[in-house]
Length: 85
Image 1 (cartoon, rainbow, N blue to C red):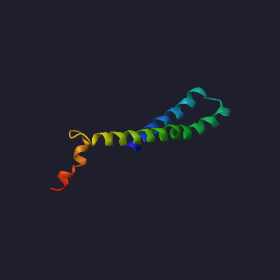
Image 2 (cartoon, helix red, strand yellow):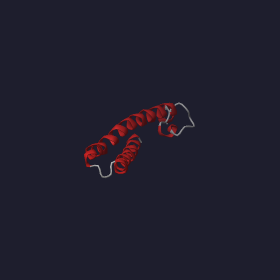
Image 3 (tube, helix red, strand yellow):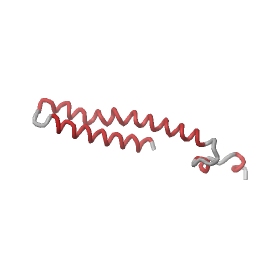
Image 4 (tube, rainbow, N blue to C red):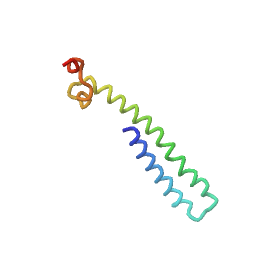
């Protein structure tokens, strides 16, 4: 899940990085170095933190879901009594 979130954020950031300079710096070749640099930096700068947040959120949701019998995680993590049957 965290990888999909990070890829989605990175793809969106790539789109913003690609379209932003086209609108603002069209016809100004001395500013294109920064535009090309942003194509690589924006997806990394947004995707890495998004991956970390999604990974931590998934871990917390998984840990909180184990204690309740009606949660979705209950089927994936059978109790000790069910394992001994």
